[in-house]
Length: 355
Image (tube, helix red, strand yellow):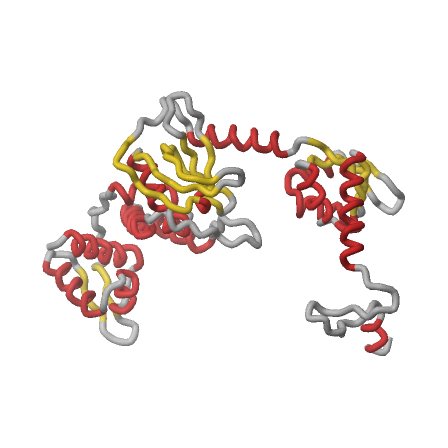
């Protein structure tokens, strides 16, 4: 019996053990084989002494004799590797471990007592992890499985990386992968003994090739600790100045939506500014160019008070926008194609509705 068929027979057995009665079409769909193959596999299981039998009729199917449980639940290396992704089938598939994860979960459930197996099934039915942030599509990472292979085997990667400042070919010693907000990052060194691990966005790896060369991991390297330290440094380098703002009640709600933890921190230290409920806040911001774009998302719900250079930069941008969208007095607004704009002017919709 070939290894592939043996694995399939074990999967069939575990499916029946975990789920009870299943029809031949249901088993075929789970195992990704034909119904005819299921018939042959069931006969093969029965020939080995497994008490599997068929129930006839519309509600029939295959099931195991009540009380029978297999102990053939040994995990393969790849299945064991996949267990840390047990709640994330999407990332497991991206890493090339989707099938192994499914097989490992089947084996784990088969090894559990009946009451714990039922509880595990209820957890899977009631809780779901969706890693990407809101309104953000998962990035395409076609080279992730190759990168992961380099991490597993400690093999040097020859890559072409498209960075913000510099792009080009380089050799990387891959130390680990991190999934943050639906985005995969690679931590790697360039191979020098004193080289510190740097972060590379996997979606910007245009080409990846596994080389024959291997490398030694730095002694004591802790992926989680290194990632936490690097994100702290990034936050410190990112917010280099603070902006003093006056924001409306609606602006206060937008602040946390657009600026996350930084916005929440600013609101915690807010002071009343006007009787109408406007607040004065100190918001950590990035460089002036980035801060202008970020703060303009608040629109008329916020006013920059300081620093003076940032206030001036926002005002200059607003003047440029006003000039861009200005309509000469007496002229009719036009569309991009140069035709008159038929959209109603302010107040027209109320008049048209008879208000």
